[in-house]
Length: 556
Image (tube, rainbow, N blue to C red; front, side, top):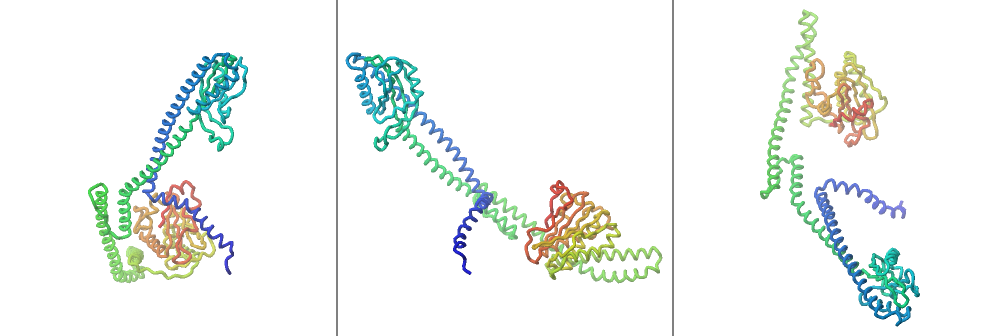
């Protein structure tokens, strides 16, 4: 069946959406892993802040200087033009022209001078009492609304000779494409003059455009922006170069350390020069030499120890068999002995059993060390295994006064080596009974599509902080001072851990002082499948949340 067109069209969008969704996580992953990226980013960001601050200060200073210079020049020019206009009006006399002609000539003269000196004129009046000519006269194309209301009030209140200024936006009437002008910022300076012909006071406003200053500031901002970007790129390049010189040896050290950790103990860093990085490489190589020497010693010691354990275990089997035969004869005939000799024969039999168990554990450990342990897999219900083991340890539990219960019934299938799993469960149960201090022991089971889990919970002495990571060590005992009449050889949990690992499973421990302990066995549903979770929690459900947070888990 061919795919539908809509499906074919949606696939690229789905891939693009998946990339977009994954981008934040990928970026965060790169940010966390790349020291060079973090250092360069920090340098560039800090440099951008410094460059931006300096550029802003420079721009502000230049802008203030240009504006102040333009304002001073505008006010001076307006004062000069007003004085000149008053002088001409005074020299002309009050009877030579009628008021309308006199005002028209004044405006035309100011407009002509404004075209030369680059300013516009707005005449309003009359202001206050007197005057016979009203209306507005301006430079052609200039809108009288360019004069702000606050400036009009200041000029009208200033009386004869008043001078005031403010910033404004010069507006031009008509289409800017037709007039050749567009609205632009400027300085408005206002004053008053008295027309001799009618004695009226008129407001005279000069509009000085600041287009050149604006263009200068825009050009300066562009120059500062380009210079800042170029400077940031240069700083980023320098930072990359510097961090490369510093971080590259660190990366090489990391790679060499990873190779050493993987077992290539002969790996060393290349040393060149005499600087701090070179001395760091020399120190790293010296450390690697010392580690290699110590590891070789430990490996050799471990090999000798394993060889010794294996040889002693095998060598003891023959004399132990002979001693066992003799002990059996004495044990069978103990009824004919006097009480002291009969008791000695019973103690001999008990210690021979203990010795045989120890020897069997040592031989099993030797097989694990030699890599000779193999699995005989079959699909098994771990519930049956748990009940079978509970039944086998029932006499010991009854003797100690420890009730053992399996609380979960059902089918919990897993592909396992039955003999080894039984041994794991037996070791966990005997360990729990031994440390239950008269309390009960509970066995739980659970399973899902991926894994099957079993927990053994006791309410005895528990584990001290840090001991949950040590309980699987060989020959380790929670209380070394405890009598050897209780407890096993100290190898049971170590063998159980090796059996769990052989299955690709987990064996974990949790405990709290006085609150008991819990061991959890998690096995994959199918042999060889990876484990990602366990169907049962490691911390018991009856434990307070505070205790669960305070006690770390041991994942083995």
